[in-house]
Image 1: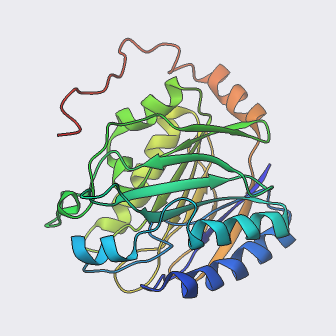
Image 2: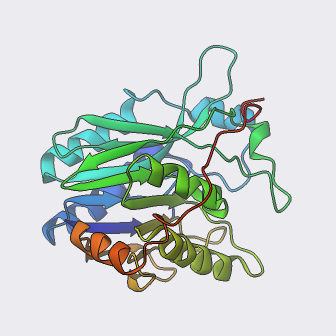
Length: 269
């Protein structure tokens, strides 16, 4: 499958962002992409959000933003993965959610971020709800796509959690906040997750003053197959499940594992 990773500077306005996304998806589909991976918070991004602001902008999975994405997938015949702020139940905080929509517009899967960004002076858990981790793996075009979000990348057990559920491709939509050493962390962790997982890693990052961009596709042996800098745009790469099998035959580190991954019972508290 040919997969595109796309990046842009998202605003607070979902309709403005949807229009920008439409242009990227059209271009990538024109180059034969069967899947376009978009960043975290691509529906609406505020570099200094509050719980009240996120609750106000949040939408359900059948709301205007996801419905608009579904129309794009149908129009161009390509699947899309994208991040949004999802409405919670009454009295609940919203969720940081990824959706995967098939080329027919059907919702194939939704993943709510397991590791909220309580780091580097931020407290994402004060404005978004904490969920019990779920291994969301979506079959598409002979691949098995494992969904994870931004800060999840810093936890190797998250990748193993998805691998144990059958993933051979790890998708990482992100709004990787800029700062000293952060771009180097991003590059290093993406390659590390690919090498230790013997899986493709496909990462889409928001751009703009607050975020690093630097979207990339990493092969199962850790080689960078395609990448972007800080600019708005997309890049495509061909992803082959046969290559995963070949790498895992040469480097059977998953088969040689001595430990399992389990979910801690207190993670939702």
